[in-house]
Length: 255
Ligand SMILES: Nc1ncnc2c1ncn2[C@@H]1O[C@H](COP(=O)(O)OP(=O)(O)OP(=O)(O)O)[C@@H](O)[C@H]1O
Image (cartoon, rainbow, N blue to C red):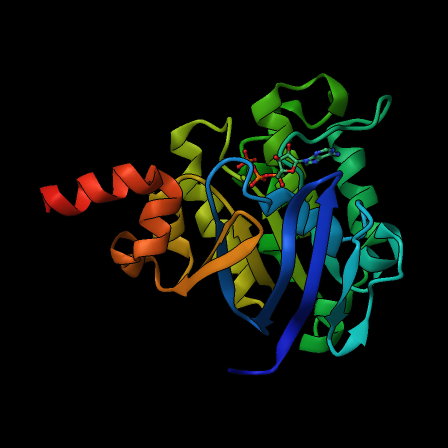
């Protein structure tokens, strides 16, 4: 595998007696796009939360570009170039959509640009991002007052304006009109072509198939699969994770 931008070893997190991450090992290669899958409650968001410093882990080592980040706070991690979006994004009061985008761009590490030896091209500039995600009509409105779907789009645009080196997206298409899913996919592909590594948590399998050559699947604290999206449907542990043992038996009989 090419050099990992992110390397996770022995990552553990429990809430009380509930072990959500039971010692996860995972490498994300520079420039790759990886789908992070699993049934509801399997720990996908908790994995992103612990890696990005929003939730303290119980144990484990996390390296970004070979440097330990596990003791850093979320702001410092983001300044190193690891940025994430949330399932339910919250927006600051009293700032317009354009203002939060400009703030995101200003606070960006510029690491991706430095590594690529250039400024982000215009497709990733603030106005271009707002245009592509149909946010131009609300650009002067308070960011906290736009719709839930528009906030989701804005959070993706903000993350890209920040010019991360590694971007983790938590359900980027949830709550977004189906027509815009293709545009989000195209935007993420463009970002990847410009050097941004992507980890995508998503339940929409068509979106995952279209975007992610590699998928990893979490279930009950463990990574149970690491394969191409087309191989997921035949993976016994994945089928069992989504359908349960009885469902998996029934599916095998019906096949
Ligand atoms: N702060 C918390 N306190 C207690 N339990 C928590 C907390 N955060 C998450 N959990 C539990 O950890 C488990 C994993 O949650 P998580 O949100 O990571 O799952 P997920 O795979 O992202 O799910 P979904 O696909 O439904 O978003 C769930 O059972 C959840 O209830």
